[in-house]
Image (tube, rainbow, N blue to C red; front, top):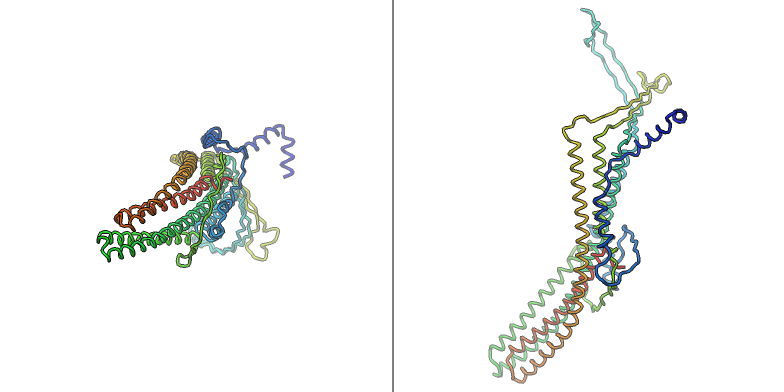
Length: 487
């Protein structure tokens, strides 16, 4: 090494030599990531800025892409908190995503190994017998070579190293690193998807419980009406038509009540699977539930979209695809491989470690592709096509994220107004149903009027609960669309 440094220092072209070595070692055919930058700058300069004309926060939010916040705590529901914690620890999809991430991490190390020389210890022992009838150009007619037995014992260290002149291996490492980053984002995406699904099905269970409550009351009301109708029919005050309508109304509510129970069971089973539990072992007790909707701040900064796992993942995939182009371009240029071997070789074991048995070999191989039938050109074209696919998908994910946020915000705004209106509708419908029951008890109307008005009152209450459920559902969708809460 000292001799090499001495030669470089005293070489009249030493500066040029150092510059040439530096350029060779730093050369890379990875293209400029122009398309990805154009897409990113397009949305950063304009469409990233706002969803609406409302005031936006000026705070730049730096989030850790390796961790999804416990966003569900905004609902202040201890049962939901415990379910989310269980799902994060035991959900099979999350465990699978973590294993994929470990695989991608190992692949980075595997790719980086090409940057280092390979040194192998290859001891061997052979015993060869040469034939007496082996060819010999100097052999005279009738003479026969003697048979020879040769023992060979060898303790070599073999060395080979390809100098990364054109960045083939460095770009491969960069591609592996970007793929690892994309798998990290994918894992966060799985976490976000699982936790939002848990919240969704939990809300479905609680909303269904509210509906079951009103149907339980409605079923008792219909039963009382049926008893009253049967008594009035027995004394001849009403016709069989009124009695059959009361019976049909009671049975219809019973049937709808069973449908609600079945829907609740299905939501429970979905929760069990998300939490990594068998359905038969999971049960969510009914309880009084009056959780308030979280307050969504005005002017959510659209920069939050940048932390969406799917956007981060697709961006990293585009970066990886771009690096692969550089890998394949390097295949069209010469490769320089250094080889060497050093060790001992002897015909006897007892002299194997002596100084007279030492042996070594150094060599270099320059490989230049001349004709491969267009293979390298095809590889480059494939890599460029894949890069264009990833950038197009990157833009699609961005556009989809804006749509999802707008859909959630618009639906929440509409449901808020609809909820206020529905409260007024419920009061009117309940009053109408009460007046109909009073008129029926006095014999002023038929039971048909009672049935219609009570069905209307029940439907208005059910719709109100459904509106409330939609408000929770689209709050969850908004959180998912923003990549994990608006905070």
